[in-house]
Image 1: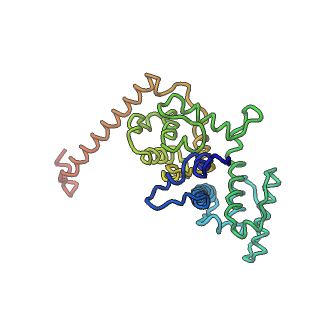
Image 2: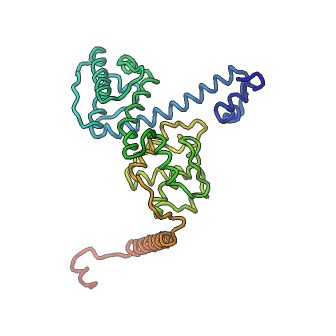
Image 3: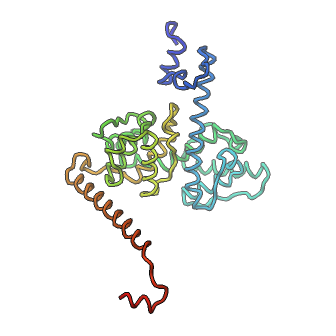
Length: 323
């Protein structure tokens, strides 16, 4: 930090926003360096909480296939059994395990999982079996992120130009898929997604009948996010790894966003050549579809009301007399 830059300016430059402004809850904010450090810690804790929630949902999405479930990511991986089951589901391979409940057995199971990852040429940095058995938050999150990178995100680079990371490929895909949408600028995996427009644009580009682009721009940020997450899960089975409040925040967790966006990539790997906002035939078909759907809903409501108001005979003989 330069001598001429204030503590407040330094942290605003470092974070991209002023923590004092972000908190804005009416309480007195400590302008000292110590106060800023404390609030930086608060924001980091919030980001870690979002990451923990997202990773827990991702793990459970796969553990469901093994009839297993984790409630607390830091506690329920300690014995190594859920970790081994997760790797079996992801790899399709069988791993041995210890069934005992003692710490020795837990260490053996976690070590088995770590050795399997190393066998798969997956680099583990400073992660030991003891760290997972002890429920170390930072290293447990680091381990799950490493697993996500290898089993979900690394495949994105297949067929791409060499020396380009999966993250960069995913970002380029998101830019292509959301290009020419008013108000959408995808420059990163954090603030570019906060207002919800980019998520809706991704879906609209591929299925314009599912998202009314004009109306989605008039609702609140959290309503937009809710709409996108709901539609992606209902129509394509994309697990709802994020909630609106996880994205509409100053401390957006990049790894959580990448994990969810990579799930959308699996569904929409290549955007259609024709852009729905500029393809008149597509717009016409979408309008006709919505009009027909509205007419059908109206007809169903009317007929349901008529049927509910009519009294029908209770015997077959009396019913035949109506014919």
